[in-house]
Length: 321
Ligand code: ZN
Image 1 (tube, helix red, strand yellow):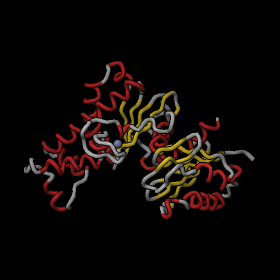
Image 2 (cartoon, helix red, strand yellow):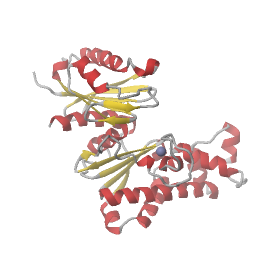
Image 3 (spheres, rainbow, N blue to C red):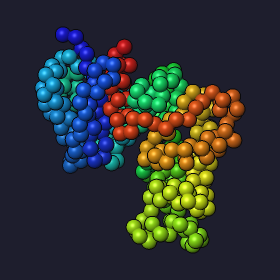
Image 4 (cartoon, helix red, strand yellow):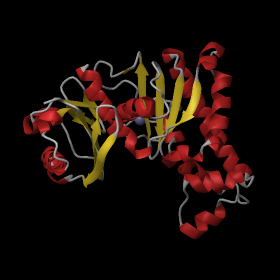
């Protein structure tokens, strides 16, 4: 029986995305199940396997025809053992042995990596990366995730923490970050950070167009900020410029180490497209070694929420080749 299928799984705080692929990356089926976080997430491996087994049956696929399962999860992960050191928003603690459990349940080879790393790998296989040998991927949403690919491989580091671009410190005495430190990149340039800065400084800018959505909805979104900037609101433009400056400097420094041909920006905030990319590229170019800047192109991510499962499937291919 030839092993022609791949399985990609992306575990998030509210749902687990799952997909079955042909060997060339064509999606046969994709679906989601809820993330059961009760009892510190103990039932998750069993939930995944039950759902996958049913789905394979539905498509008349024998598990023996599956090459392996790639799994992305949030948190700090030891990709050699498939253990999660800690994933705060799932409840896993103290080296939860996700990889081993899934392997025991399924009898398949299982490979686990950080979700942001797999999103980078997915974009590189089927999205904006176009199989770049050296690539930096940054996901800007509630937080800022990062994934680095060098020589075609995800960089994991000695304990799975490489590429955590969101936790590069940009303000030594800045705002508190989820990681327990202060002034990380994500405190300034995530959607959360952007909205916080806008709300804090709005009182000094009483004529800003942002007052209307704030009064109407009781809160702001990054879309409000980009929309107001489009209307010429100087205050909103200044927030976007600051975010572009801080992000551009951090990426320029990472690029000095990686020398990428592609820098892929994804996540909810990337929906702003050129409104973010143009000032970001300008800031990046002003900080970057010209030779590094010349070699690379900025792209908006293309796969959206599928990047994680696509990258997880590609991880299986890479590990077994
Ligand atoms: Zn941090």
